[in-house]
Amino acid sequence: MAVDLLLGLQWGDEGKGKIVDVLTANYDIIARFQGGPNAGHTLEFDGIKHVLRTIPSGIFHKKSINVIGNGVVIDPVVFVQELEGLDQFNIDYKSKLIISRKAHIILPTHRLLDAASEASKGKAKIGSTLKGIGPTYMDKTGRNGIRIGDLELDNWQEKYRNLANKHEAMISFYNVDVQYNLQEMEAEFFAAVKKLKQLQFIDSEEYLNQALKDGKTILAEGAQGSLLDIDFGTYPFVTSSNTTASGACTGLGVAPNKINEVYGIFKAYTTRVGSGPFPTELFNETGAEMAKIGREFGAVTGRPRRCGWLDLVALKYACQVNGVTQLMMMKGDVLSGFDKLNVCTAYNYKGETITHLPYNIEPENITPIYTSLPCWSADLTKMTNASEFPKELNDYIDFLEKELEIPIKIVSVGPDRTQTIHR
Image (spheres, rainbow, N blue to C red):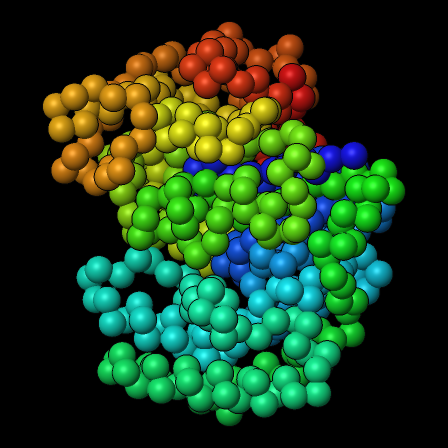
């Protein structure tokens, strides 16, 4: 058996949670492989909207086991809040949810460090969600971090104290006004850790590889998007982990030759949260209308998302880096009724026409080159079969498939799991 991957191909917020939820019935195990609680995976069904931050999106299915891999960073306080949110739905997460011992823990002082670091940057801030994720990954690579497995050791609180003291000294170094009561934060943190320890901790790489030997099917779920990858994203306006396909191998402990399908998810247009370059961003009424119709606000942070036309240069790049085998187009319904649709098919880069993503896509270097296509006026949200699609939508999909040379297998026409059309 092999592992299938599900990845976002833009700057996150593509709708991965919904598609994992739709696909979960085909898999025995859903495994989250990177990122932290700044990810907001939104699922909507039976008239209820659910937002997950760390827990894999298969948790609402009775059959699936949900694994949080070693590449994930976990905030116990946020995690326990998530668990409490599941209690009202009678989810048996103590048997369905298991955590890698090698996953790192976000401490209260990691969040404080995040705030101090961002405040010190002034106008050059990167748009951090201030969840402590960056500082936690810094401690991971600096070999100072505390991991889930450490909670099983007698001296873990001593390790915690030493690291927290170091963090407080670093906060002082930034010389910015960060008000906090660490004693209160720690009381909440240690109470959450106590609840967290009621879950099963595993050696996840052994668990997952044994599951493959036993013929189990596994779907690896990524967070954020490919253009936020620490190596291949729009650095430094990126997240702190590898959001691309390679991150699934290092974040779960599965070998590259165990990867089978790579599902790439993208919106029919483009959005971005926070700072950073965005070549196709719209600053006019069209962009505002996209944001309004698409309800473009962060599921976790509530931050408004910047909106723009689909950028095929960036999308091709993401498909290439990830080895995408199938595509899923989200929010096609949002574009209904626009006068026309523009798709960026090339860049004018310092006077030269290019079709690849260059090192620097800041606006002083890049001007998007667009191809215009007719839009559709029909309401897609009530459609249940691809045979109902208007000609203009089919033409749009055909154009994208030809440019990307990858089939678009799923088109989402609304937020509910039932508004998912297979082609």
